[in-house]
Image (cartoon, rainbow, N blue to C red):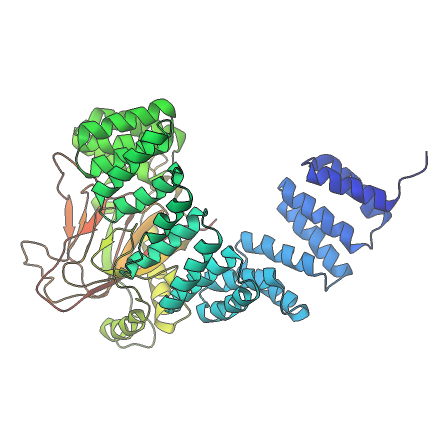
Length: 538
């Protein structure tokens, strides 16, 4: 039998790859690389098969070999950049996308993905320029339009951002993400078009229960509970088998304090989708609010067997412990050893923290573009900056980032390991910020009680505070509280601890800890903070 030609072998490898049969594809490509080692397209295909098979390190090496043979191979440059972007190596990804654009300035993939990389590293103005070019080249691509809109919001071009996000919805009216991001921005701008995209989509899809689910969720977070309930009941009339509709209706009824009706909806959802962790979590929140701490403890013990590192589950388990008067609560809420409140060091170049904070405040004010709080966050009656603040390349913001990091490292060194504790079992050697943002609260603004699901430890830095925040205030206006659960309850628990904030102070606490703030009144001054979540370095 005659030997198979390289072209035939190549075609075989492609067929295996497209069928998801990666092992035989790799066998064929290994043979091909031996027969034709100077063919860059073979190394490119090898890299693609290895990527799909999950061997990302080998995939990168194969792609680099293809580039050695053909340095201007655009498909390889784009794919290598994508691997590096997914791995968080954004500078390397940026370099490869830029090489593509040197060769082909109008390459849409490179423009779009470079824009996303620049957005992620805080180079928002350049990201806008790059994505503006991509949006001009692809005016009918909804994903490009959405990402263009997202970066326009970061640069403060709100009206143009809304226009781009509306275009994304127009191009892909069935895409839930496009509706979500458009309506998030419309809400924060107090725009009367809020939720109109859902109503317009309903004209095309009047019987779509998924559309009703998304609309009702937004209505619930906007506090329009009657409308949310009506929307969900109408959808359930058409699709009673949808457990997600029952579950969301249970959450709405919980917010309305219709305890027994909410319980029925969660029980129905659980019958339809047994052991669903999202349903169990909602049920656990409900029964804790109803005062059934024993059942709440049972539910969260079960959930933590499924997901032992889930922050939200630990937060609610702690609530059950507190309600039952169990010692484990104080193990989780060991305020003396797990909580820090103190001044940061004055950053270099400043005489004192007052001088630094004044300049930092001026910088932060430029990033508060919105007119009201986000729809799905804890802040109420204020504004929150978008994206990852510490990625913004501004002098005072970077100085604060470094000062907070120094304080975090110093505090972490005081923690003592405990192999059974959700926080102390994995004290990291070093940390990285997983999120950062600024909050600006005028009088009446506050934080609902909440916890942070994306951190190991979390906490704010106080940049500017109103004069009404005083040590001798019996109402604790503007103070931060710990231990009060953020759930509807027949008999609400009070905070365990009140902490008076001070300008220049940083507070650190395990991310599972319930915390919130008390509103302040009677002043035109504002409360400005920078908050962060951090995790161990991978």
